[in-house]
Length: 227
Image 1 (cartoon, rainbow, N blue to C red):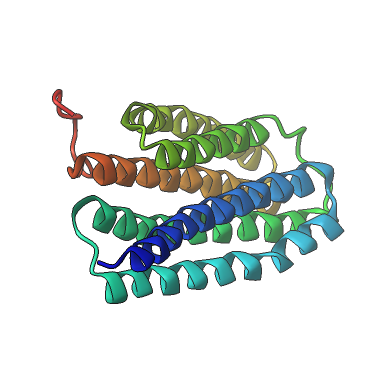
Image 2 (cartoon, rainbow, N blue to C red; image 1 turned 180 degrees about the horizontal axis):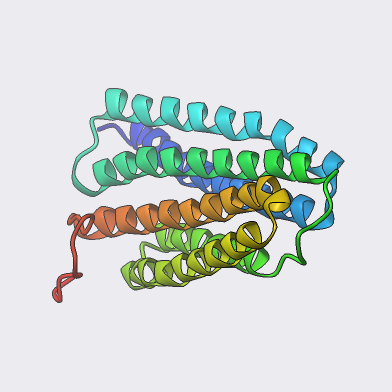
């Protein structure tokens, strides 16, 4: 491969990494704004968050196009090939996280005119955990850090536990007062969306391990000791 072609190729790989991080930072902020709109009952902020989802979708398309150009024009092998295929999969998860943020913002719009059932405590905690998992999974991608990726995978239990707690609490509210069922169900949806964000962050972390080690740990009950 000629030297100038090498430079173009490395530049495209660098652009791929930075674009994935840009998309990740955007969806992380989308979660922050959507949950803030919910907690503060801020309908304009919720609607602005919904409007920004098209930017996430645009980045998704741009990264797909760049990845396909790299595959078609440069025929990468081994580690570079794993980087490109991992980036393609990561952006799928990031786009879905963006969708979750949009759904939370939609529930925030619906609840903004309703009386609150109770102060929101566990849902913001879930959002903090989900954002942290996403941030660390992207850090692991940039640093090619499998230990950090494994730590993200181990964090998923905490967010699942909080979701179960929110479910039980909201269910008790619905049993005690049927008039709150509609509001409680919307909050339950939000909790489920955040639990799914944690799942997508875990997917990203698992793909980082594949990128670095060339081994998939998805669907395994235990992580291999020689990883």
